[in-house]
Length: 123
Image (cartoon, rainbow, N blue to C red; front, top):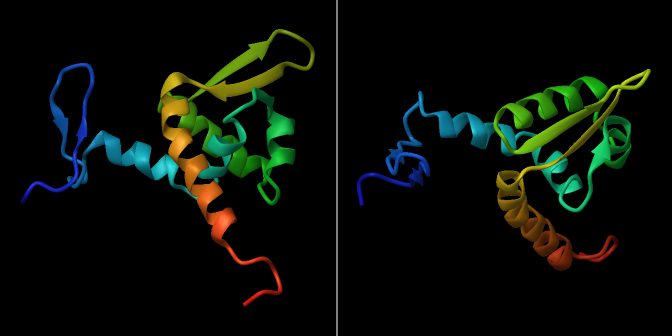
């Protein structure tokens, strides 16, 4: 078992070499597991949200960091972005099918943590 973990590339049937520094899958993993990427994916799991709704649902995130996380996740194909031609423009975000697939285990992980974490005050 010398190759390590690898992800399958759907289009060509070739495999990503995720332990190589130039592997494009590494960038996606970095974006998903970034401090704010996880929270964006979980927040969008069951809802389409506008930028400010998303910002308000993720406490502690700045507009700058939310914009950066969304830009990366849209570029990676995990999140879609829809701009309504209004004044000012209304921008809505949601998960693509790929984003739903990636977000599901993150939501499961969060559920497991919150179910097993002792209640505050218990130690």
